[in-house]
Image: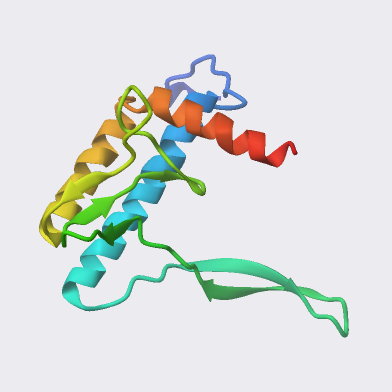
Length: 148
């Protein structure tokens, strides 16, 4: 028992789940991080394809095993008619409205370096909760599509 006396003992209870708002923030933050990595790789002339572990079933034997596969990441940006880069922040398959009226869903950027900086700024804004309302409405619209 003398070994335990060296530790600081406290009463603790682990929370069973995090709040839905925090889960959505973290999900979007991780996706923005992937977009930053993709933009930086494109700037350097290389590719970004993170590896994910996938479970597959052998059709002949019925045995399950894990394989590593490249994860496909789609770019959230495109070049418009005037030659500028338009960046859409997406939650799932839906773009997030970035203004309070819900009409504007893209950021116009002039260069690749500004794209990376804009993504980093957006990641911080999401982590601080500045887009919680927009994420909530987009998440609701996305869930409504699954109920049909």
